[in-house]
Amino acid sequence: MAEGPEGSRPEDRARRGRRRPVLELLYNLRTEGESPARQAWAVAAGVLIGCSPFFGLHLALCIVVARLFRLNQIRTYAAAHVSLPVVWPFLLLAQLDVGRLLRGAPPIALSIAEIRRLRPWQLGADLLVGSALVGAFLAALFAAFTYRRACARRRHPDVEALIDETSRRYIPAGVFAWEFTRGKLRHDPLYFGLLARGGLPERGVLLDLGCGRGILMSLLATARDQAARGIFPAGWRAPSPELRFHGIERTEKTAAAARRALGDEATIETADLRRPGALPAAAAIFLLDVLHYLSAGEQEALLDRAVAALEPGGMLVLREADAGAGRRFALTRAAERLAGLARGRVRQRLCFRSAAEWSERLAARGLAVAALPMSGGTPFANVLLAGRSPAAGQ
Image (tube, helix red, strand yellow):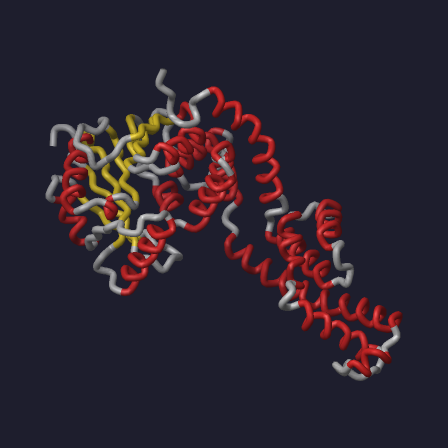
C-alpha cells in the first residue's frame, strides 16, 4: 500500500499532536512581553541579575523576576549573559573598584600580598555595592538601546497582529518554520508591500508558483480573517472571500509545511515547475524569487506557460533581482550564493536579468508591465514587475 505525503499518515498526525503543547509553550515563551517597554525592562532585569554576585542562581533569579513582572523569560536570561566568561574578570574588577571608591579606598592592587590583606566581609560588601551600581548603569544603557531599537521596528498594532497570527499558523510545522515565517514577514518588504498595495482580483484563483512554505497565501488568508473581525490597517484592502489559493512547490517537506499552515484554505501541489505541462487557469499568478534559479531556456518556457494560464485581465507578478543595479545587485547575488551554500547547493547556477530585460520579456508576451522597487529598507536590488493581460474583448 502506498504511503501518503509526509504529514498525512496517522502516525505523523499523532506525533504532531504530541509535539503541539511543547511548540505552544516555546511560542509563548518566545513572544511574551513583546511591547518595546517590556522588552527594555526584560533586558534591564537580565543585565542587573547578570552583574550580581549571586553566581549559580542567575537562571532561577531570571525566571522568578520575569514571571513576577510578566517579562519575557528567554530575553531576561539572555541579557543575564552580560557576564560571559571572557567579560566576567573585567566586570568583577570594575565592580570591586566602584565599591572601594564609594568608601574612599584606592583601586584594588592586583598583587597576591594586597589580596591577602583584604578582609572577606569587606570584599563582599564592596562587590555587592559595586555590582548594584555597575549593573544599574549597564542595565539602563542596554535597556535604552533595546527600547529605541524595538520602537524603530514596531509597526502598527494591526500589522503586528497580522505578523503574529500568520506566523502562528506554522507552529504545527515546527519552531524553525514559525521563526522563519516571522522573520520573513518582519524583514522582507515584499509581503506587506503586496498586501498594502492591493490590486488582487476579487475572485478566481491566485496561483503561487514556487510557493515555498506558502507565506504569501498564509498572510492573505490571515488578512481576510482579521479584516472580517475588524482588525485590519485602515486604507488597506483585504483579499476577497471569493479569491482561492493554489500553490505549487517542488520540495515535499516544504510543501507539507504550507499544507499544515493553510489546511483547507489552499490547495498545495508538489511539482517541479521545470517540467512541461499546462498550469491551472488563474486570475493572478505569482513568481516570487523563483526564476533566477532556472536556466534562461527554462525561464522562457515557464513564462510562456504562466501567460497561457492567465485569465483575460489577469496579472502575472514577478519579484527578481535587478541585474542592472550595480553594487546592490552584486550584494544580492552574493547573498543568494551564500544562501545556496547554507542549503547545501554548492554548484547551484543562478540566471539573473536586468529589470529592463524582464519587462521586455513580459511585454513581448502581450502584457502591460509596471515595475516597482521592492527592496525597501534592505540593501538588495529587488524589483517587482506586474504584467497584466488584456481584458476580454480587447
